[in-house]
Length: 140
Image (cartoon, rainbow, N blue to C red; front, side):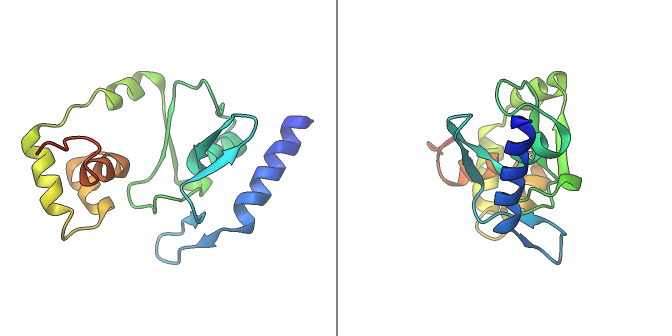
């Protein structure tokens, strides 16, 4: 009962501030994360949506939750969720980029959208943002 109440509360919290993107059909929350007191941390809205709509655990899960590459970063539309099994998740996490690819991403990031660059290199938009912000491959 308490879990259902928490899911209802988070669903209401997400949908009350959401807007719908007419082009992609994304349900967009104003921020990419939402603080969840029971998890004691800000969590990506996609991960919260996966828990609400698909029952994927919020914490301790070995699965990666993301949205389609055509989605906006703050999308929590349950139809757009992609949940990778643990075996695939470890493969995705271990994927290595070369310095040459990171340099290309930095150049492409000047003229292309983050999601377009991510699609081109078959990586997540978060990885592209980290490269563009110098959080990784910052020495190039």
